[in-house]
Image (cartoon, rainbow, N blue to C red; front, side, top):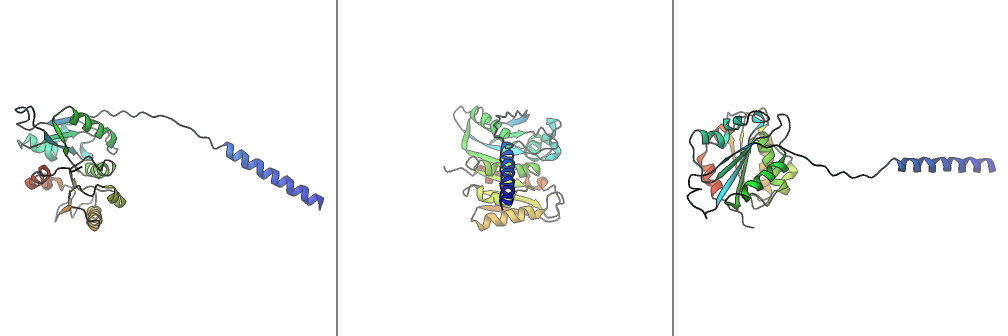
Length: 240
């Protein structure tokens, strides 16, 4: 009996020692990190911006796709509003078009917002008329920005982007959204937009959806040449 008790106490002691040893391997730490991002960008001013010293303007933030990431900043002009500007199109608001500096990484949305805030604060921009749009990887980043900064944008247009479905709950319920997607998209399947639009509509959100028949991933070729898109954007204003 004494021998069994001694064995039990010895085993219990070993277990306690092991438990204490395991606890000592769990160390609490803290590190302050600093991330720097070098963002190149283009900034467009409407024709009448410099003729009035008091008038405030809206601003459209445009995020390009993966094909223009990490290369020559001139490549931003190959699609979307920047391409239209090169072709002579005029817009009633400022357009900020940064470049994702990483060819194989997602947009650094925190850095994008820092750039956006800097441009807004140094120009005559109406903070209640800041619009957001992006295509492909930039469309996905637009969904992300809308969830991370729900009170910043007056409206959003997403072209062939994708996002986790639960993000729908984090988007400002008062922000109107227009989604574009090609039915034959083999890069980001149209179901990504289908599900998100359906979820948002179930939640009573103001969502327009343009689904292009016979169009693949390059839905932006048609979406950004839709004149009513810019009329719709310019008509939106946040009510805080």
